[in-house]
Image 1 (tube, rainbow, N blue to C red):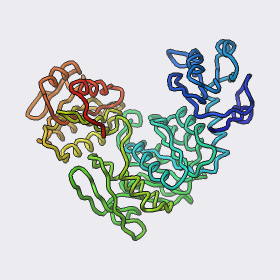
Image 2 (cartoon, rainbow, N blue to C red; image 1 turned 60 degrees about the vertical axis):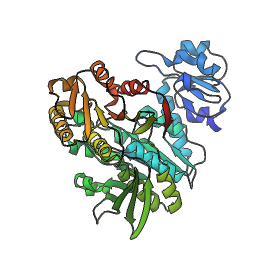
Image 3 (tube, rainbow, N blue to C red; image 1 turned 90 degrees about the horizontal axis):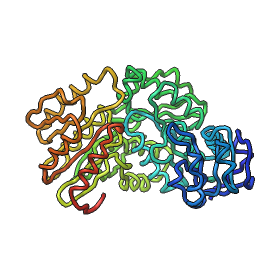
Image 4 (cartoon, rainbow, N blue to C red; image 1 turned 90 degrees about the vertical axis):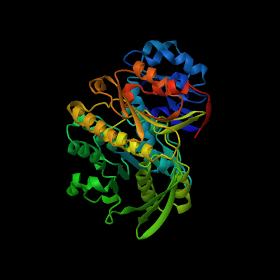
Length: 452
């Protein structure tokens, strides 16, 4: 259990009826997820007022409830706090925890592989040190604050993920967390509709080094061209990739079945690793994670095991095996580059069954949609070993041919899928397109054997 000192941590407190020091497990904003010892925070949303769910939170074992609605605060029993604004309260608590912590902080942003790299780093570092990692996709203002508030009182490393779709967000998050190590995974075209150019995206990502606490910046070798070296100041730059002049160099990749073995070089020494997932692009995330860990002098055995035991987060390449078919659930998000990478991995996947790539639309690409969709369809034509099933309003203008079929909506896609008795199905689309519904449809078609 952790300790919360109300008067020190909450800057906008109006009233409280509770001990001044409260033991807690975690801060939670969904009353259904509250467990014994959690602090429930009621937040006013667009449709619902979270304050209204305090009774469920207490029933589930909340040790404290934070309100910003006086009406519900008055109704509630003992162990309660009233604040001006619940989001600002969480932010002040998170900042309080950060200021008290001696943990070395690592912050990760980028267009592709943020969550995978974060999870790999956690797997590696937690083998040797007390390590905290931001929860799931908690990479926006509120999520980062909750992640900070939920840090253990005594840890050695804290790893955070920063997401953005608007100018200025990364700098704000970095100045809140004040990391020592800043990491920018490969920069791509995610949110290009908002930022208008890859250069603007890179500028936003590199603003992660704005706090004077940052001592190291890790970036992909291809993105060095976007970096203003003058802005680095005393920050030490590390690059990773395949070029010999990079600090961490991927030297070789081999494949045994659907297991990748790869070798990298760092500071003149070579290290071998094993990745047990068929997504080949995870290798570069692993190269980055290994380089950071080696630089922190983590034992090689712990790094090896951390990468070997890595499994992707939910809906980010999650593999589900059934009697007659395999589903690769990659429905959390989809940028142009990540779709191409997933297609390449499916193409190399060693399996006897027919392969199907169910591809939905991308989000936040604005005026670039004609370019990206045309290039994507042209790329698919070259992959004759895969049956492509494109689904979405935009694809209704295309004409089906050879290994490409186009469906205006999911209902039409489902009719086609009914005729397919078995196969390997990659399902990928932007989160807003809700293609987890397609995954659920496929799951209902057979009895699950196992999840790997």
